[in-house]
Length: 223
Image (cartoon, rainbow, N blue to C red):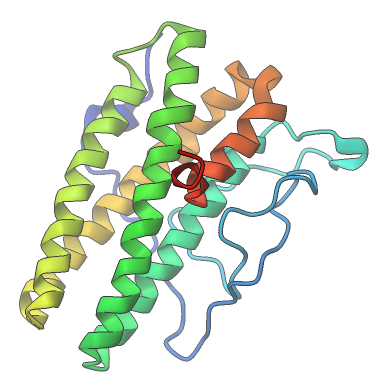
């Protein structure tokens, strides 16, 4: 199978920046996630204003009445968690801009944990299932795992800069991290997640709750 140009590692061009206003708050209350059924809650709840990373949202293709799962259920669910992680990143940026280093550190820990839980959901649940179903072990999932490793390194660098209250180092690392997250999310939301929706449609009833469990960090409690 030939993959779209997004997978060649090149720059994807201009992508919308995180656009939460500094005066807006993030609503962490739980809610429903697009067309995902009521039995599956949004990964980390909704917030007041979406973050634009390129308009990768899937088109509305029907309701979820009678427990019916939408054609884009995986894309919707995982993209919602992208937005939630983005919102946590914005909170870190806002704290740094105020010079509130302790608050920035606290917000960063929330962001960092959210990112690792998101990666765990993909690497331990979604990617292996996709690979087993398609036989594609060296395709898009391999690319995404490599980018996860790079993002983890950037998260570590940002954490060190925050611990030293080094605004310049943090700003440089955060800018690189932002660009990489934007490109990474576009690849997943435009290519990989839709492929997962196509090949894993018969697995949704068990797959979505397991993804939610990983994203919420509940897998650590069950060990």
